[in-house]
Image (cartoon, rainbow, N blue to C red; front, side, top):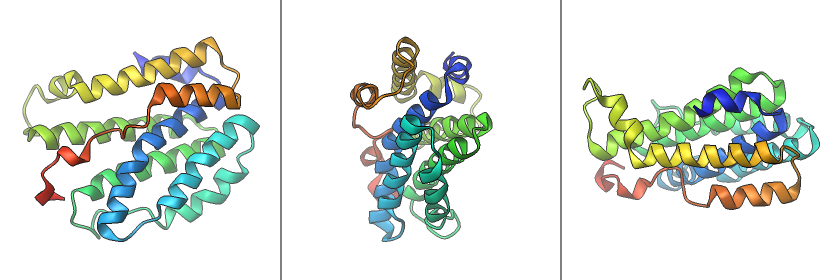
Length: 196
């Protein structure tokens, strides 16, 4: 599947995928910031721009600068009670791991980045459908959900576009942004408002 193909992409292409994935997760972090009056959506956006910058210039300077700045706005699950905290946490893991990836070029950080996005959808489907985490067919239900299928389709469309044209330019990024769409990774508004 997708995880087997993405590691073979050039590092700048992976940085673009990471930036686009974080862009899908930014609304989740922003919802938490608004709800809790804590966090920094501007620094999250700076992190996304640092990833795009790396993809275009192969310079990790911006990522190295933004990483410690963002880490102070990484939510601690023990400090907040809102259900939004877990989504902000996954969004923060995704951005932090992406910035670490471009800073170190160690593929484990890219894999951790993708896992954070997948975990976020997994959690959303469990919350939305009120699934028992111990039911034996849980993984099948989550993988078959429209949300997980939509994410796999999104990643595949980005992967195929980058395989056809692996040279990262501003035009490439604009084309990939269209494929990525501006919708959030999950629809938090569908969750029980009282739980938020």
